[in-house]
Amino acid sequence: MKTLKKYARPLLLWLVFEAVAVTLCIAKDNVFYLINFSYIGTAIAASLFLFVRRYRHARRVAQLFVGTYMLGYLGLLCNENMQIEGFWYYLFTGVFEAATIHYAVAKIFGPLVFGRGWCGYACWTAMVLDFLPYKQPQLPEKPWRCVRYIVFAASFLLIAVLFLLRVGSWERIMFFLFVAGNILYYAVGIALAFICRDNRAFCKYICPITAFLKPMSYFSLLRVTCGQEKCVSCGKCKRVCPMNVDVTDNSRKRKNGTECILCMECANACPKKALS
Image (cartoon, rainbow, N blue to C red; front, side):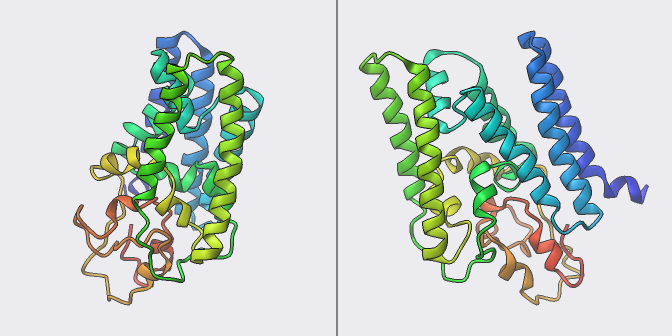
């Protein structure tokens, strides 16, 4: 029973993705959705399984398998814009495909189950940024969090204006925006990481996706909890957290609670194994 509980999270997450995969395959009559979500779910579940087995680079497994798939195969080879502009585009056209399905599962309704797990295990921008040297923030936070909401609004206005102007060649425009957007994100993300000495500075201050992720993450089923009877208030968890979350507070109102990306660095650092 204890062993089963130990592997409950990876099993639960895999079942959730399989349910989504089968449902979309039947609803859309397209086997691609079965393969796509089964692949992503299996990669993330395998990563969590390796974490339980105490493999040091467990999370990176999911980041690399899912991130390169989303960026390289879906984005560059299949010409699907999986950035926020692609979501607005499909939303304006009233089509429930590609980016709209991706956002619904990973960034709008999915966070009710796995919070901001997307940011920790699947985001192809963070996949690169996490290779940089500042894995723990080394400077105080900047008062720049409002910028991400400005970027969110700007992305919406860009697609809205293009629709109002009735531009043609939408496929070419979407592909260009995907390539240009990723180049810009990487450039800004890397620059910010070195300026702020924080690999995740882009996630905290610039990334527009948090406008979707944060509200749902507040109610997330999967979240880091602290066994208060084991905690000795050593502060190691707070020092290693890339998102500055106070994981010793189990309240949903804990400091930066909706910033948690479930990276489990805090659990790895805890000398008393109080975090799970």
